Image (cartoon, rainbow, N blue to C red; front, top):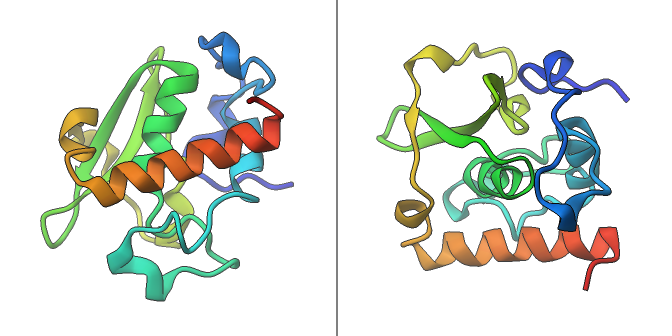
Length: 146
C-alpha cells in the first residue's frame, strides 16, 4: 500500500510508548488500521457531506491526532485554516506526521505555522469527544483489545 500522508517516509521508526497498543508498530501501521475504521460517523459533522470511502480522512484530523498521541506520545499541533478551525497533526520525537493530510489533495499545508493544541479544549465539544471515543473503540476492536 502506498502511504501518501504527510511525512510517511520519515515516521516508520516511531514505536508506541503505550503498551496497550504495542501491536501497532509505527504510524504507518496505525494509518493502515484507521483506513478501515474512519467513517462518516467519525467525521466532523460540518464536513460529512464531503466524506467518502475514497477520501476517508476528511474531517478526522483532531480525533486521529489525539489517538496517535495516546499511542506514540508527542504533541498535537494545529494549522489555522480559513474559517478559524485548526487542522491537527502530530510531532513525536522531532518527527512530524499528518495521518489525515490526504483530505487536502494537492494543497500544501504550512506545517511551520502550526501551534500546539490542547486535548482539553478540543474535547470541550461533546460531539468531538464522542467521535474520538468511537474511533478509539473501533481501533481497540480491530486489535482485539477489550
